Length: 236
Image 1 (cartoon, rainbow, N blue to C red):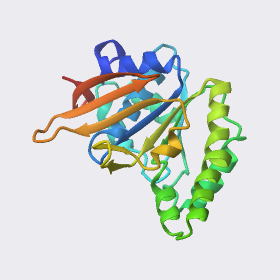
Image 2 (cartoon, rainbow, N blue to C red; image 1 turned 90 degrees about the vertical axis):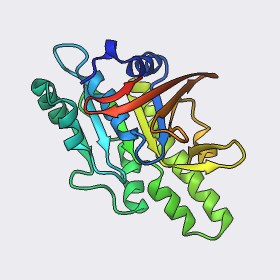
Image 3 (tube, rainbow, N blue to C red; image 1 turned 45 degrees about the vertical axis):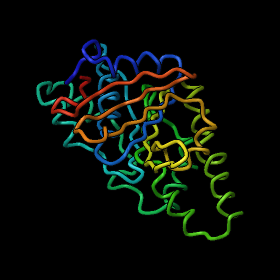
Image 4 (cartoon, one colour; image 1 turned 60 degrees about the horizontal axis):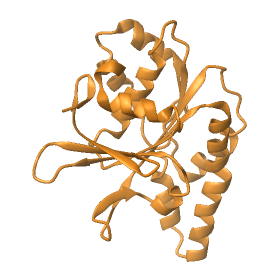
């Protein structure tokens, strides 16, 4: 597993997260969104001894990657044991089956009682069911009302709680292609543009197997070329 001081990518995100605890990770399938989140969470949880930090991992539409975690930490059995015991996966058995189930959970979590050492919350994938639920409504006003309710009633209270309690919140998104800018963007990017966050965009370079990452925050951005190996995401 890559240690913080050996990974320019994780180290850079870690430094930004000290100033802004909201991280948005977007990218197409296979670019390493969940791996990056898992790597960052695992590094933060085992950065200092004795290990104390804990995490809530909400498998909104994606199964928690337990096998991937074991692969990342196969040379560090003491760390993987701690991490597996201190990442609390919700819902427990499998991801939500629809938007209504996800919505009900988000309404409750803003007031849920967490263990005192919860320092990270991950939501993977936050936009999946929202996209399909909005698409099922042909009324444009209803679509707008759904997005506004999602942001103001479900997501924003959780963001404010995380800010108050100094919990890092990681949102993992699906993406779509924006022909105007020629770039991929998170679904409902205008919705999430309301949030001041660290934005991480993962993409595959055209014509090659290389992957590119752009990390932006407060008008500045840093780009990395990376690959996904057995030990996680590695900058090249």
